[in-house]
Length: 159
Image (cartoon, rainbow, N blue to C red; front, side, top):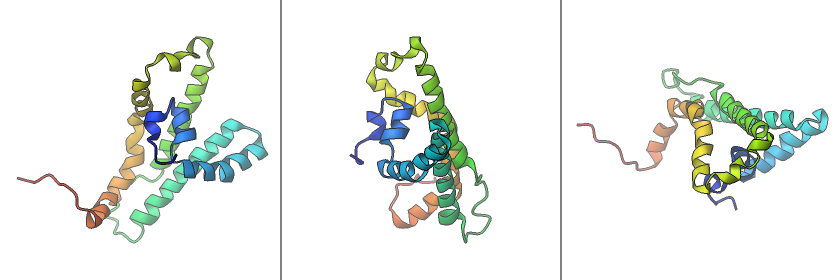
């Protein structure tokens, strides 16, 4: 199940983030964050926000520990810490917006009216405007430079 293409099988942003993307982490976050927050605060919305913030903080930790720790500050210029959290909070807001829109009677059947071939496009378009919030820390922190040491990459020849 975890090797299927989650984007092509998703029916909406909430389906993508909540049921298909990174199934293993989804299970950990559900048990470790969602259920305890939901139990103590009795709010599914707050519990969902807590999961997205926790995921963003985990990615911030990865950027800091894996790419910025023990690197000269010149290597890490342009890394905006907090942008991964912002990316995940944005996607939480997209899901809240989706729930609000689909709760309106005239929009309930909208998802079934859109041909399934266009659904992945719409899902990508919900995150594309802020994708740099997620990708920039990895690019500016030297993630791909570290990859170049391990993998043979096709590079553009400078002429």
